[in-house]
Amino acid sequence: MNLPITVTQEDLLEILLNVAPGRPVFIWGAPGIGKSALVEQFAEEIGLPCVSLLGSQLAPEDIIGIPQINGNTSEFLPPKVIARKDPYVLFLDELNACSQEVQKAFYSLIHERRIGEYHLPEGSIVVGAGNRAQDSAIVKTMSSALINRMFHVQMKADARQWIKWAQNNHLHPWVIDYIIQRPDHLFSEPPKTEEPFSTPRSWHMLSDALTEYGAGKREISANTLKMLAYACLTPSHAGMFLAYTKSLKNTHMLEDIIAENAKWPSKPEDRDILYFLAQSFRAKLVTELPKSKQEISGNMLSFVYRAKGMIKELSTINFEIAQMVVASDDENTLPDWFMVEVIRDLPRLVNSK
Image (cartoon, rainbow, N blue to C red; front, side, top):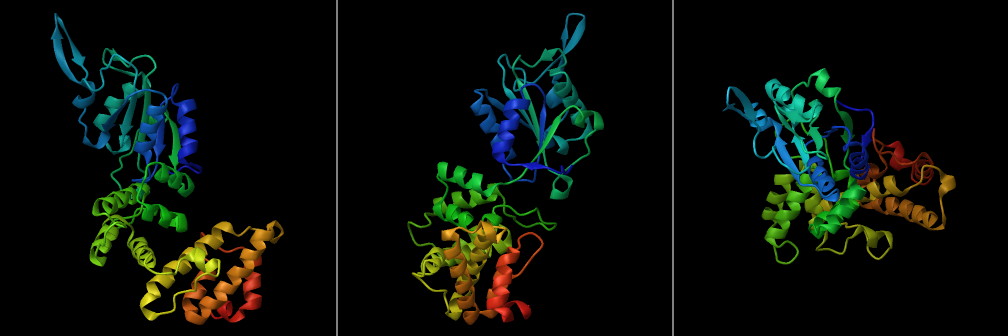
């Protein structure tokens, strides 16, 4: 399923608070985007324990339990993890990855909030989650009857909210600072090949690894940093992150260059740093420049003048990288009014692309 509208973590938390107490909610989203963590946060906020069942690893008897003779009749005894006396949040993770038999076992739990003779305690909440078919994950078709019993939302990664969360949870400062500079690298769609890819979860893994290795507090070899980055991230993102860590040892920081307290790195051995800074500069332009020239304020006007000067300075060092800064793509394009000014001041930069 691919819904036409996606929601951020904060939006989804609000949806769960308002909808989930009365209706099962199903969260769609790519692997590693933070679905499980959000459900746990929701349970914590409403003061209920969270019980997670991983659909892809369950058999029907893990849900409905086993039969036991009771006098002249038999009854199914549900597993202890489900059969609780007090209300709780039941999180059915990877619900659409389990077999049809397991989905059938889940049906009464979602529809009638019961398993055999056992009913969920009053006040219990059921939340499901799963990956989409395009995520290259294990996905099985859910029956229309099961789909129609749930409220469906699709979650997206939001860099601003994730940075706030990362700061509150003391993730490694290199990871936080990098995502501040390259928010577009927080998440990338799962690849068709078997390789790591960037998600909020993989950045968290990298943060943990950097912390364990003492990165920033003691010297770590370039090979070790390379191993850690490529073990967690999309390869192109890993390369950019390594360039970022290299820039920490130099005076070439983007904010310093903008403030004219430093210059673009020009040495051949610093080409990877130059590329990273130029990519970060482009991301900053895409994010901060207003769509309309009429929206420019005093401070923004100064930034626009400085941005054009930086592009000109960059073009004298590496013409191709300067072209990359102003190049258009399908998703992130610089405002038309800014491109008009770039064409006017630096026509060769645009016309020779």
